[in-house]
Structure formats: C-alpha cells, structure tokens
Image (cartoon, rainbow, N blue to C red; front, side, top):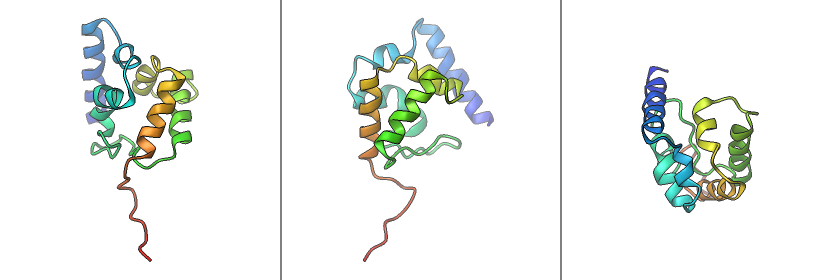
Length: 114
C-alpha cells in the first residue's frame, strides 16, 4: 500500500508540475504511445504488471478492459489514480487500449498443452 501511495504522489506531483494531465497528451496519441507514456509505469508495456497492487492487463478481454476504463472515467469504479488517467481518454482511445492489451501475452496462466 505504501508503494502505491508513493507512486500516486509521484504521478500527481508530475501532473501538478506540468499543469496538465498525462491524458491530455495521450489522447492525441496511438495506443502504443498511450501505453508507453501513461500505462506502462504501473501495468508494464505488455500489461503484465510487476508492481504489487497493479492489475495484470495482458491477455484480458478487450471489452472488459474498455468497460473498466469507461467505469473509471464515469466514477462507477472508484480509484483516484485510474480516474485521473481515464478522464482524458476518448471512447476510441479506451477501445484501442482494450484491444492493445487483449493482444498481449498474459503471465496469469499457462495454456494446457495437448
């Protein structure tokens, strides 16, 4: 929890220092740029987070990830960090991010070999 709080403080300090949210720049970018500039710090470039408390997104369903981002943006999911990042994403950005992470390999499970 302390690690997440520290990360939150670093992120919010960076936003305050620039006078804009990370999403303002990310919205004009493609999904790979959004991931590199925003998502990767917590979730990893491939969505397989290595930090405690950050969900692993790689290999998750695109529609689930898209809905989760929309829920963070609308407030249906309560997470101040994700709400701040999702606030500037368009519906197209959310769909593109869901699709991007759904195409990544997941280290949550190993498929059974036949």
